[in-house]
Image (cartoon, rainbow, N blue to C red; front, top):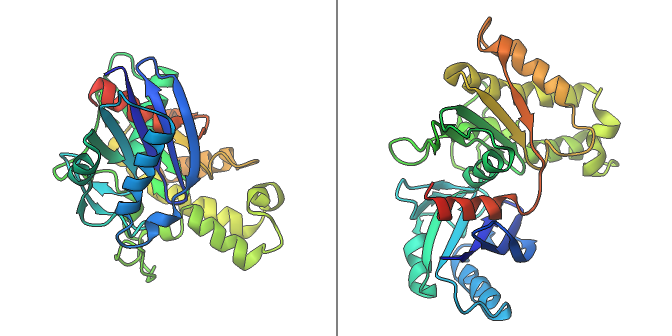
Length: 298
């Protein structure tokens, strides 16, 4: 297996590329993932992949890796629930795609692939002995957990769903079906709601440049720090990786977030010696991470 197709499906965008064993990416492109918000749209996903194979004249592909913003079963076949993509709900997507495409299919949460990419690119755990927490704040709040060289998946494969832990007093229903999930107030969707309510005349990409010192943005950063500080206190990580769309926005108040996390993390430790890395956000990261996972058997 010298090359594969890798797909990174997010709540907003779908990215696809051909990746070689040396992690060189060819035939990369990005498109909207909104079509997957319609029920039954897994059929359209098959059409997209078949068109890609035909257009790129890929006659020697035997495997495909797909990252999905969803809970995935421990055997990495069944998609339980993708709150932002109704077309990928309660379906054995791996077996379905394998039957339609005649290719080996490996699924995983999209954020797991992002962390796998960042660990590889930045050489974060060459001895495979560290605990690394990833916090990828894009459309939602992604939270891969990596322990001793492996993504931690838990009993059912759904570990790391920090976004769907509850906040007392928050009564809004989350797209996942639960009430009061922290992602409602700590995510890119939450930030967009703040812009709509308070800064409607400001382009989304300029919200931190223009409004970081406002009470609304300070409150957003504070709310974001609560779930992060909670997991950091529980797992006492060697390293914290922060990235994705919101974190990478121009003038995002990184130091403010770090200070708010430290304020709410257990003292003296782990609060006093936390290590952070803000990784570069690239459209190809999830695609490459998916390829690393498939090639190396993560």
